[in-house]
Length: 185
Ligand code: IMP
Image 1 (cartoon, rainbow, N blue to C red):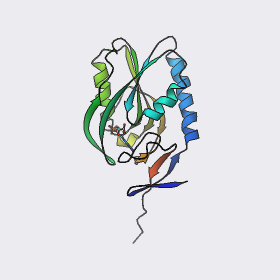
Image 2: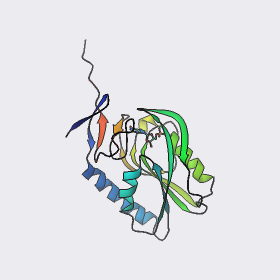
Image 3: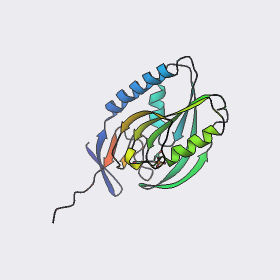
Image 4: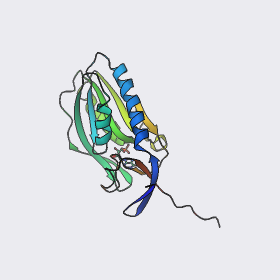
């Protein structure tokens, strides 16, 4: 199935699950090396990161803990820029090595907010691991962005945790919105 329809939008395949799994395995290996002899706490940013978080954690072999935060900034296919927290951070991040796990970094507003909230608890270190990164959409630079699965164009994507109006999170692969070519005059 190479194209799918969700409400008014048509999407085409961008990244197959196999490809996502291979990249996730490599990131996991890197984190196992970088955090050897430490016990990081992974904070998944809900809802979008739930599948990536689960698959990434299966590759982590060092001792670790997990937690979640739920925030939202998107309505439909555009970031509203205003972050709403609906499910708070764990309160035990003081002196811990924190790894924030995101599905996608778009404008960077969400991560900026989450990093700010983590810093308030004075952790030992913070790094960010995101499956997807849209460099061209970034409005808030993120120094802590350490692990990136794939850099993608500034286009709207769904699947593997990412949604359009709440739909599509369950898809195994990642799809991008198909744009209609404008005919030349
Ligand atoms: P940011 O705050 O603009 O960086 O956006 C971060 C959040 O917006 C992500 O965690 C996603 O939930 C959502 N988001 C950003 N880009 C997309 C996209 O292309 N498809 C679906 N959700 C997206």
